[in-house]
Image (cartoon, rainbow, N blue to C red; front, side, top):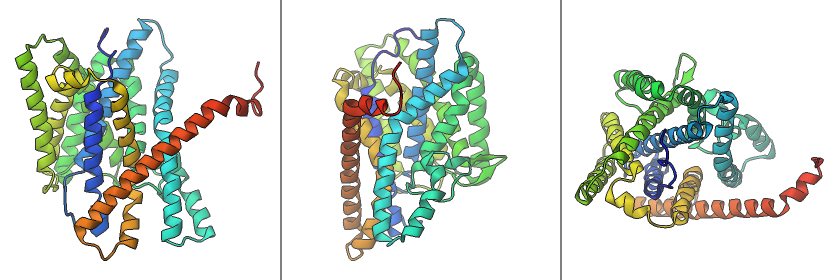
Length: 371
């Protein structure tokens, strides 16, 4: 019943989230130079697969925790699924909506957007603001990377209740079949997995991509629990750490100059093994990192979220105001602006949360009668 397996916060996973968020930011420098004109990390899109896998891992962990808390009692699965998704949204949405405000301000200035155009674009972007644009309500977008958040939440809406209802059947039968069919179709049709905008029988491929990766995360969680049960020696733990580091390093190095899709599934398999080892906490590096206070590493995870939702707002600034600079200088400016904007986003969200914690109860009294 996974008793005691989920009580610790995995600092190592938070650190790798931070590293892969940097990778995604560097991959998106392509927008500075034009579509297809990559200077670095042609295969940096693999960072998104890492985040989907980790999301599936954490979703499976949440399902296992819920199952343990229920202790065999009947539960309202629909309500529990809604509650699970709302918790995710409450974590994501403050950073997302602040990033949208930043993007609006940037575009109004750079594009000299008229009041009419601003009103029209705000109306057309309702699908994105509600994180529903990967269902088809995609008429205007302020945050280029928000497709990931939408696809993740939609995928979880399908996977979580099935995983929660029949965890063993889902983990051992349904998830592997889904992975084989989804990624097999992707590789056969396009020779790559990172497809987003096309549709297949009512599903956008970004959602299918998310579901495939998150199903891998579900299996990875089960594998991590098995690894955690093995009484490794100190030597074996060090070897596991070296293997995981080698796997992550191989993906990061090989994606620098390769991004044609032929390595997609190999990279995903390597990341799945690495996340299983890291998520288990059995290797010596993860074990060492997990000894530290988790507050620092939670900040890494928070920064990763803020960086992801904000960095694409920076490339138009670089293109508009720094055209005469060299390519590497543009990349440096883009990265610096992205980091600064992410830090500002975190500061604004912290201020909002502090304000609400101080005055939220008083504000509610104007609208809700206390019984």
